[in-house]
Image (cartoon, rainbow, N blue to C red; front, side):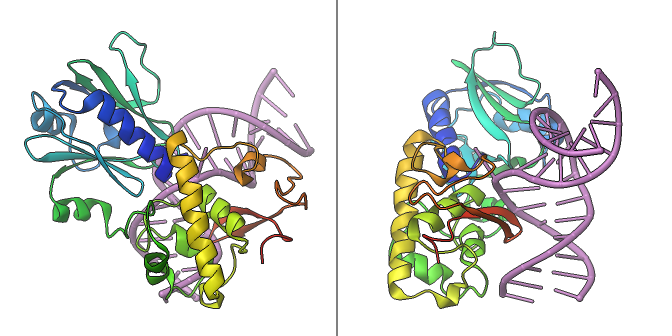
Length: 260
DNA sequence: CGCCCGTCCTGTCCGC
DNA sequence: TGCGGACAGGACGGGC
């Protein structure tokens, strides 16, 4: 689930329920999700502190505290951040629960990919956890997109998903963007012409603009995502039978008629 | 450098 | 009904 739009949704949840709230308690039903600290260490760092404005970089959610710590959350494939009332029954996959003055924020993650890191809230310390990330994909203009991806040797899809090039694009979005741009996901980056670069940049921003308010990649009508689960999926635009293959190591769906 | 693979985990679905 | 295997929206490290 969690690609840029999803994590942006989690950021909004954290902003609405957490900003300026004091951390009253930290409960860690899934301590193995804490990658560089312990439940005790987390409690010491956060308890009685107020949370500051949350930020997002690519698929990372940054929850700073006002005293200069930051909780870094990565959601892997199955993570979410849910607001809850302390009386709400815990979900079996709740791994970290921040008890705030006005409710709880619960980090939930079925498969235990991703995790929770504690960091100082400064760029170097955060980068030490996240690794080098490219500029966030949201709002990236055409020139900058080409600058970031242009020297890649592999497939367009692989470049879009490489978090060091641009941050935030995962498997579903990569397919969606290629589909909207009319570019086959396996095309070599070096073979793209000027018009294709423009189409790719437009498709990227259009797709994000629609997905970000939804807080997810919508599986609606008119979206490639909407037919992804179907056996003999057809192109929502032209009706051709879609092709499936593994590209860049991931399951990939595209339209052989609309994309070349 | 890019690509493929296995690995980290858990749950679901499909075929036998 | 039970079971094995494949697969799932992420990312890393190793090997080629």
